Image 1 (cartoon, rainbow, N blue to C red):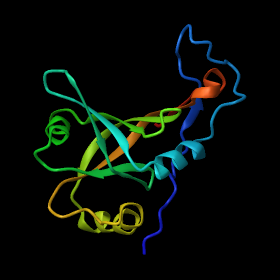
Image 2 (cartoon, helix red, strand yellow):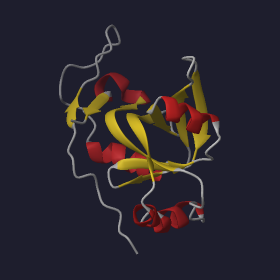
Image 3 (cartoon, rainbow, N blue to C red):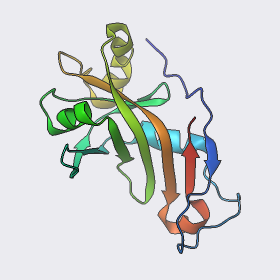
Image 4 (cartoon, rainbow, N blue to C red):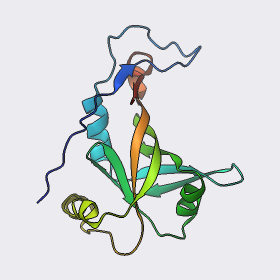
Length: 164
């Protein structure tokens, strides 16, 4: 059974720039990257936001996995999100708990390597009771920026992680 690897790239941790929201300037209270990875791993449903060719956003709930420092999901090749990603691979993935939100900005890429996809099967079976796969596309979204916040302590916990 393949073991899930933790992200090997440590992101830069800082405050998001949100003028007039009272965001702390102190590093005290910044959320650790491990907190975001835990949320990305444990969330069952995720919000996926893509952009249609005409610029209109498209949001949908999906299942997925945080695995090897990236977000992975599958979808039908003719779905709106697949058509959108074929034209513009930029997307946003959000976890299910908005009160302790993790919002990932990244670029989706279709993964065709069967060995890589097979490595996801144990995690998918454990989380959803099915391995997924089949003939539908599998995508990997590597993060470029991730935002995290805890609603009750928002000004003190708002955190942004940036990946090189």
